[in-house]
Amino acid sequence: MELRLYQQIVEAAEEVHRLLGGPGLLETIYETALCKELSLRGIRTSRQVPIPVTYKNELIREPLFLDILVEKDVIIEVKATGKDFSLYQVQLLTYLRLSGLTSGILINFGKTDLQEGILRLTNPLKA
Image 1 (cartoon, rainbow, N blue to C red):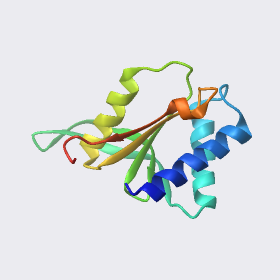
Image 2 (cartoon, helix red, strand yellow; image 1 turned 180 degrees about the horizontal axis):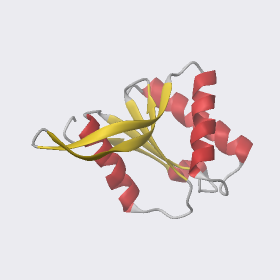
Image 3 (tube, one colour; image 1 turned 180 degrees about the vertical axis):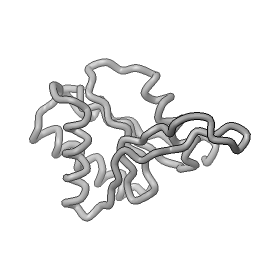
Image 4 (cartoon, rainbow, N blue to C red; image 1 turned 135 degrees about the vertical axis):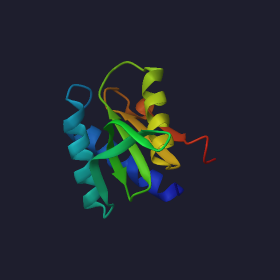
């Protein structure tokens, strides 16, 4: 992910956090607002993008769903909790691996200071 796109995503998230406040709302509200803010900045997004789960080239279950896909290149996983769970990082890394994408951002709007809730991750299989 290019640095400029990362900065634009973070700035958009900060704007959402500033206007809606945080913590306190549901993940889906932050997700919707973040997509709207990114769109206002001319950045393409898709919400709830299905990612198939396969085993030995065979579909083995219903797809998993990415919260936000930015410019068909960056996964954003949105959370709204005051707690940090390593499970969220593992979840995003799994989405990166299954999708074959390289970059992801975990954004936790449940933090009073949003900067504490932003984590940039890279698919170790693509690095």
